[in-house]
Image 1 (cartoon, rainbow, N blue to C red):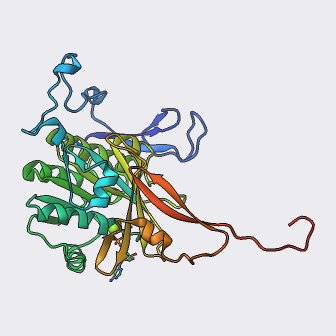
Image 2: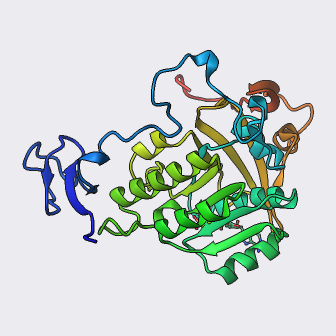
Image 3: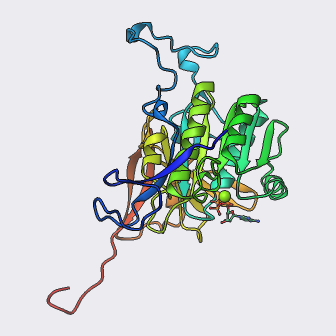
Length: 325
Ligand SMILES: Nc1ncnc2c1ncn2[C@@H]1O[C@H](COP(=O)(O)OP(=O)(O)OP(=O)(O)O)[C@@H](O)[C@H]1O
Ligand SMILES: [Mg+2]
């Protein structure tokens, strides 16, 4: 069968071209052309996943899926700080994007969360496009994250991954990272805007129909945004950022967008050689170095989501000889 044709479309004005152009002849924007797949007319405006064929009253929509009651739609991973930021656990069929600086500990975080889930008897799939099976195993050994139900796979072809997800029907799928996967239908390189969008759309579609929670790890660009199109943030249900100074041991996980929970919650972790350790009482950390009875220092309770965190505020002043200090 002939391969689907691809075209290049300007993301600013919609001008199309069969070749990539540096500058759009339509609107004079630079670098706005992105490769897209054209699969005939039927591709336009496909049905929403899980959509009904006719409008139906919201009261009669069946929210119980897969034999679970509506309120049981969340599955706890067992990593408390992670569950808290997700809004109380993973929502079945939801897509979560996890971004963060290079080497901050994204792979460590997802691997530990998936181990925790697998230890509870679930089958989870961890797909890495960045590391070999041996490297994943070595990290797993260091983190104590070896569990029978945790299936590791070093693969970059999104079509193969989607097929395998359909066959295995795991309880959760992790893609580390979305920028390393590619679709055969597009000719552009993995990590390009068109590829990232296509890969994400394919996986989100597959997981939503099967009610499988999907975690996409994403790279962050120099200016701090998740690499690839901004549209990726619209496509997923939840966007989390894993932050911290790589020279310090503390890491903070926070939600930037969450369709099923608050974005006020934060999760605090400590990076150790055995992996991430949850910090259940962050106030301890913030007040640990506080000199008692010092002037200009005050402890302030601050509400972060459902938790009160005590932080120290210091006012540092010194006498000045100048008229305008
Ligand atoms: N043996 C070790 N002892 C202590 N900390 C370690 C050890 N090995 C790795 N780390 C920590 O793990 C971090 C790397 O974690 P991880 O590979 O999960 O990051 P990442 O965000 O997935 O990176 P990338 O963007 O490159 O995929 C390092 O920055 C380091 O702090
Ligand atoms: Mg990684």
